[in-house]
Length: 55
Length: 498
Image (cartoon, rainbow over the protein chains, first blue to last red):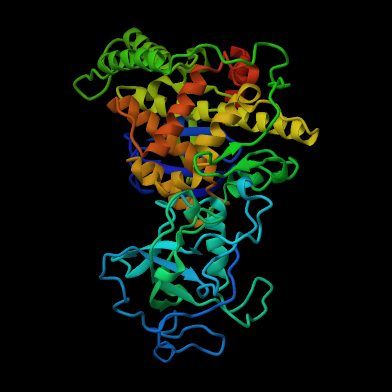
């Protein structure tokens, strides 16, 4: 699925997909492709980062 | 397209069997009336046509105000037949579908159709109630053959004396996909949100004379040659494209592609790359280098970063797999890489080619507009090669690309077309085209075959070939790739991104 979001004040389209680029739902995705309206693209893997490491 | 005053000559027609309301609208079916289960003519094989308005008394439609330069100055002339639109019966929907494709109807014809269909509305654009609506007839008849048998907008003409009326239709009997105006979605002045830039002056179509004659559709009719030099290149290189063999370039790319696919698809026991850190490091860098080589993309524009990055989405913090900038740079995080990543990279590289070629297209167009404003008409193919090519395979074919997007077997890409259909301000056309091309690149990389209809393949190969020629084309495209960031600048940007 794709959806529109605002992340940190920036408008973007978020596509939830599997690792082989098949559409996935918001609960069962492997990759998320975030396309900001300014052209910047970010790929996110569905691996929750270690919260300790984040600090 | 102009319709003459009416003369119903069909003795078989009984108006009493087809009641109309006070506005002239036939009330046999419609949005408020149950749809007819059987539409007359739907079970016979003869070619059917529809016409908005009765058959001209003279037996001839007249030349309308045409965008077709071949018809300029001939407005009001009689055509050798009656203007009609070809229809096919759509069994699934039980509707007459207007066949705009097989007839090669010009864009002006599609626009005329939209106007005619819109004119069936009870109220006009200003909210005033219409006093009259054209009757819509389902017809058969013998076509006027040859080049003369094509009307102002590319519509077929029928010999009036052969016309038979089979039915009187309501607009709800018709299925028409509608006219899609590429100006509205492809050019920034009409849709700034899709382009990240604004301020362009309105496109002056009058200076952009297109020849819509059969066989020359979409070609410009600029009469001056000379090949004015684009200011984009600023004298860096010759505008004249050098010898380029697309076939040789594609064959070389295919060789590398096959080798990369074989080399980097090796999986370990757990479906991941296995080995020492050094081995994994080399695999990641080799994959990037070799994939870029096959795809003719500068590997120094792809950074493989060891450190892990996080990204917050839906209230959770996830590991970032990579990022891409509009300027051509791609960043990959090594920890997320593994077998199959080359397909994703092929997808992203096509995005970067699109971004840069699209910008080049728009810049060349902007420059060309300046020339036209100054009443100069340079040779487009030489002065603005990216514009020249993309106008033909993308701008002129946008209706076809839209209609045929499902021929590219990617459910991922289809989502963007659905999004575009739902709300083009949120999912612009350029995004749908961009994602579809990127998927074609990924599928090509993974299967060795280019998917999609001819229109999509033409666009795909145009992107590949233009990219391969970017250095020969002067500063239009290649110049943009010179703006590389230093490692320090890159690091700073990555920090700022998150």
